[in-house]
Amino acid sequence: MASGSGLANSMSDSADTIRAEKSADAFRTITEVADLLDIQQHVLRFWETKFTHIKPMKRAGGRRYYRPEDVRLLQVIRRLLHEEGYTIRGVQKLLRDHGVKTVLDWGDEGATVPAPEPEITPSTPKLNIETLQALRQELAQARDLLAVADDVSINAAKDPE
Image (cartoon, rainbow, N blue to C red; front, side, top):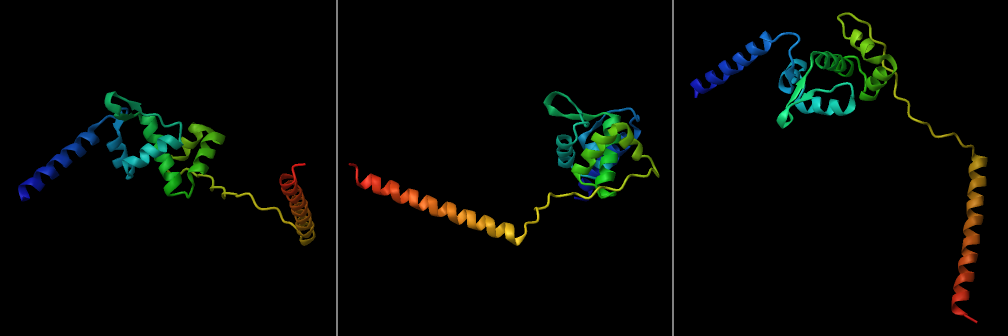
């Protein structure tokens, strides 16, 4: 068994060496990008659905190949989500409001990123007690009118003249 695990380790080391020797301009597979960002592959596929700026090339069989600019944007998105406290919606807003180039600049070492805006949920309008009581009275009147109309239609059905 020890020889099998040694073979696996040497194969893994070889793959790491090949990845390390790739040019900075080389396209990367989803496995390479996931390893680089320390995230799962399904997260990358999910981010593709949420961030339209990420468009890896797809070859026959659906294999994804990420361009260097895709990898750079993914690195910045990961930083914003995992380190800066942004939500997906917050990063989408940054990309929409400031553009990809500005967001990419925030990914530079030591760059200052604006603080995420708090998510604002619509609040329920404040209703005073008088308004609520008036509304209750109107609903009671409507209920009484419907009851009378229902009685009339029942009586009409019983007495078909």
